[in-house]
Length: 246
Ligand SMILES: NC(=O)c1ccc[n+]([C@@H]2O[C@H](COP(=O)([O-])OP(=O)(O)OC[C@H]3O[C@@H](n4cnc5c(N)ncnc54)[C@H](OP(=O)(O)O)[C@@H]3O)[C@@H](O)[C@H]2O)c1
Image (cartoon, rainbow, N blue to C red; front, top):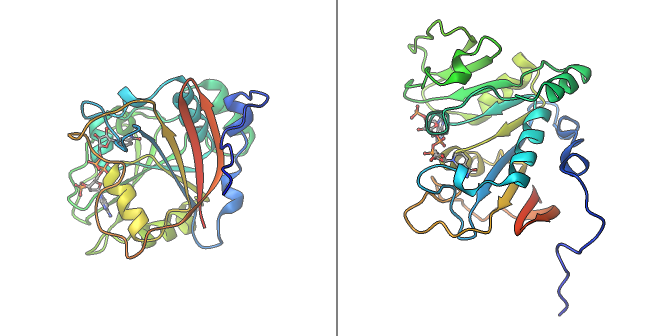
């Protein structure tokens, strides 16, 4: 057998060259958004160092992270991630905001929050920022506080139906590309329900150890999901991988 070199040395590209023009929305089917997730993992498959993702992320990951954010119609994060990572404004670079406007998008992606318990960390800066618009999928009796952000109610049924959430995002909010930024529980749920189209995975040259959270948790999959590799880039020992569902 022969092995292919996954990352042949070639002409270096900037993060903008590699990830600046993804056009994720063009990949959306008619009835839901194209769903991608972006994660950073240690070489031993963990999503955190000392309970947070920051210890795994370096300059290349941060560049890809912000470029991805700037190209999504909406961004989904679990309540655990919102809380632990103390989420703030989604697109911070005024140039990226300007590019979004030029593409006919809102300057800020729509934030999407989904909670079964209704215990939403309203105090995080993202949900208090007047520039934010957030769709809140939560039980019908969840009160939306006046935080300063534009909060839009989307009641959940008895179960957390991610498929129904995707339909509502597309039909009622025009979302064609949805970026899930975690955490592991929400990624596991999206995978198990069959809604994950692509995974952007940064593999950091770090070993995090057994006490940390893995990249996905939650229900078993009936069968492993097969992926095709779309691209592989490297920077200082970090691998930036893009996979698509086969
Ligand atoms: N390495 C990375 O790239 C990365 C990315 C993101 C996060 N993280 C880390 O991951 C940790 C947080 O992740 P987590 O797994 O604990 O929580 P999470 O996935 O961020 O959030 C889980 C919560 O989301 C809500 N949820 C709604 N629908 C759900 C569904 N169908 N399945 C599962 N959850 C659903 C529930 O909220 P309610 O409890 O309100 O019902 C649930 O408790 C943090 O330590 C963070 O630093 C790492």
